[in-house]
Amino acid sequence: MNRIVLFFFVILTLNSCKKEQSKESQISPEEAKLIAKDAYIYAYPMLMGYKSLYYTTIDKTSPGYRSGFNEITHDRRPADNTRKDVVSMNADTPYSLFAFDLRAEPMVFSVPKIKDRYYVFQFIDLFTHNFAYVGTRETGNDAGDYLFVGPNWKGKIPEGKFKKVFHVESQLVTGIGRTQLFGTNDLPNIIEIQNKYKITPLSKFIGTNAPKTVTSIDWLPISEPNDFSNINFIKYFNIYLNLVQPFNKEDLAELKKFEKIGVNPGAKFDSTQFSNEIITAINEGVNEGIAAIKDKASKIGQQKNGWNMMDPFGNREFYKGNRLLRAAAVMVGIYGNDKAEAFYPVAYVDSNNNTLNGKIGKYKIHFSKEQVPPAKYFWSITMYDKSADGVGGYLIKNPINRFLINSTTKGLQYDKDGGLTVYIQNEKPVNETLSNWLPAPAEDFYLMIRIYGPKETAMNNTWSPPSIEKVK
Image 1 (cartoon, one colour):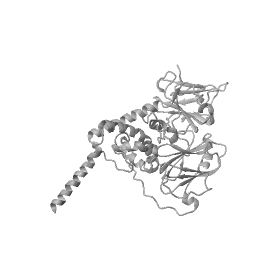
Image 2: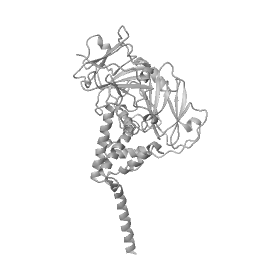
Image 3: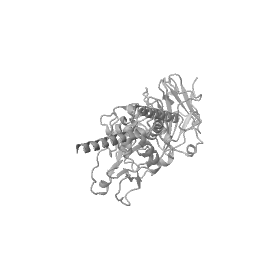
Image 4: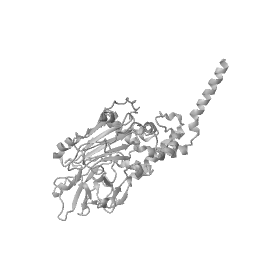
């Protein structure tokens, strides 16, 4: 009897060893490297979204923490240099921010009637697709209730209750609101509007019993930021993949391929299942993925007069399977709007193709009357450093607390022909150009134009901004 038990024990042990070795034997270092590069490019937007959501919604010790799920919070003033939530942050409009957890039931988002100002709420899934909009352009300025339904919900949707019903690919959703501000004296009006934005569970909205609570998500703490740029990215990737099932058929072949390096929805990733040779190959693939994303981000749009005419944000249909474009868009500015909502030309160089740097140069941009950004609602030019990753960065501290110039900036001086010159330099001007001064850091920087509600000339690419000229 003991011999029989020993025999079966040996067989089970050998089978276990074969299973442990099977993944290793199915992949060569060359293949592991190629798969890791593709997997990282696919995963990068999700990884950056994980970081953003973790710090704003999960980690209560984070300086950027806002609230738990299904709670809306508001900025009571525009962003400034202290904000490091995301790169290339908008400083035009105080943000409203929230995250839906749709696993238990759908959520209702309600807005009041908003008079005489632009507003928008942008809804982003875990892939960073802009899958829905509520606001002036898309749904108008009347009051309304909007329903958001997760991928696995099977309940009945009440008829006649909602202006729109949105079906979402992921169980978690990021919502970002922007409400137009007409100067600091307008802040009380903004706050009054913000207080009327509401989130309500469907059961409470229609007066039925609340569903059973769902288990908490097994969030992995971000203790080692470098884990997002090596083999350990798979740990975080697997958590989010568990929240986007059933998978879109467009992604099935890719995700199946990624399984060879340990990518599996909800699975605990353990790099020790691979040899050092395979781990090295995967890390090399990750590095190649990062390099490819950076390269794409640096030339993400058509070049005109030194400006990248960026149009990299949209829904799943917009990307048409272009994972590199989706990743580069996130690197340049995660959670950017569709072009129809806001157009984002960005400049890293002057008219001579030299990197913009406030330590070695003074610059100006002259817009003729015809070149002033063609916006239905308003436009802005915002200054950023590159401190995040060498490509994207944050608003910059300066002596006059001016982070942008926009079409509602008080005291802005236009010339007699309706043109506008913006002066960009580190030192404070001593003459009349102060009113049109956009302070620059004594280091590399980049500029981003935002056109809210771009007119047809911007949409069809017949308009472009003028070159940034270095002042001699």
